[in-house]
Image (cartoon, rainbow, N blue to C red; front, side, top):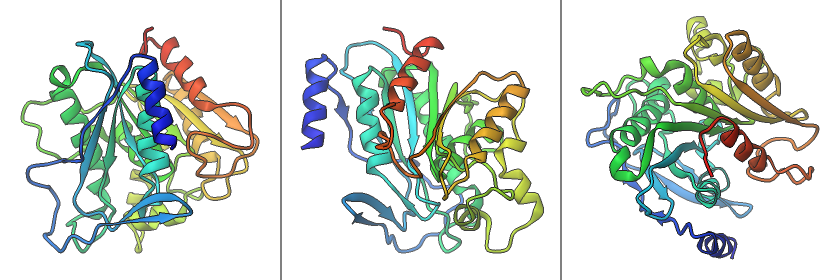
Length: 302
């Protein structure tokens, strides 16, 4: 019913979206060990989750094909680098973006796993970079403004997004055309950012563990990798988040400002972790704040 209501609203606003099926992210997957595909979709409390994902893919959600090149956001669902919360942190978010005139790509990035990846620590970053490569390379054909492509992530997906924002030069994918892999902006919702003392231990261990090297902890602590070329950011977190400490967001925000990078942060007093589009403890609807931010920064133009 929720999806039907969303579609009706889109039609009424004249923005009927075009939803593709999931498409292969690569012709030849890099950093891949051929194994049996054990990908599985489950429901946890009515929320769709993808487990054991080893074959990366993407789904493109395009606003009505009106010959207008629109902004696009690549969405990385969360899940502690263990599962993907593909619906409430993925496809539901894409539908919202379509409703405000923004194209979206939901990314099924690989779950780190040494059984099917030669280096599990770089697989999610590779997949985010490949999604950016495809979006920018195919911008005109897909109705995308190539100068307004952002990366977004929730929880561990926020770590994927922040990793591309700070490590886009280290993406380790084939890019013979030298397409820019730098996002134009980043949107981080209750993100894992740091692998230091404030890390979400599960995300850190799943990506670079179980044996932790000091150099990897620093490399994947994205607040330590910010420089003057890091893209501007919009960040949301709840102060009472006991899964991913709010310091992940506030430290990143402060570091961005120290490098004179535009950044906006909204902190809920309560809400915990994993609330998706709507924090039920507050009347403040953060997507409305995001829309205003996109407009203020001339990414979304009415």
